[in-house]
Image (cartoon, rainbow over all chains, first blue to last red; front, side, top):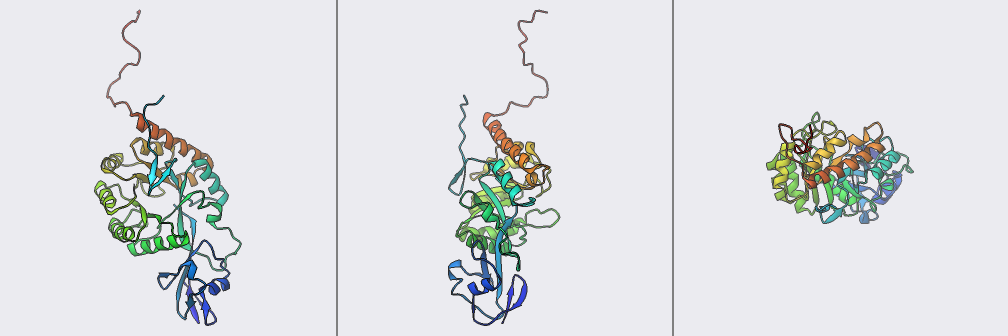
Length: 66
Length: 263
């Protein structure tokens, strides 16, 4: 399936949880937030939320800024 | 002994000893940022919310590992947002990222060249964010009527600009800041425009409750030393405000007595 992660279209195997997706992207869980199709998926649901074909995923963190 | 007692800065129910709020942008590295933060004495620091770089080194440190949310109040901003929708979305991401922390700095920009606030979008975002339970510190223009309107909507602090973001031009319209202060029931914090220590003192001498700055420290020749200068400038400006300055006179007024001269 295709997932659009942070603006990049990428191929993944079907039936992935959000936690598995983050794992495949080598992103460590912790100080980040994830939105799928404009809706935040709370950290507590990462392990159970299933991503589906054409999902638009945004993964953000805090960086330096004023 | 001073007879004037100061009340501390309180934002969204939390008391701060320092009236200086600093940014975390434009530093050479995390270490310089951290040293400047320590030298500034600030207890609140702004951060931006951005996409994680895919394929980045997963061992790369995170800003929040260096600047601990346990030790400092993290103030996520909506920098780079030009619409109310983007700003609200950014605030929600920030709240999730910081485990439900509801304090945010709202800035909805209107134009890339000036980075002036888009006040109509800021007001639109205001209604949504307050209803959604956020404690919002809002970057806005130095228009006293807009400042009052934002306060009425329920923002916890109103932060008028002294001059454009990153310009270092100082407090260009102190009279407007004074008008904003006259009406204010929430903290008024000058956000943007400070270039050097005297600018921070001027903001505080006007009676502002605090000053927020980033570039003035980060782009100084020695950011850590400038952070220390800003700490003192904010403190001395506050003390001068509390002490009450002498009246301005057009002509001289001798400091030594006229009586008792022997010549």
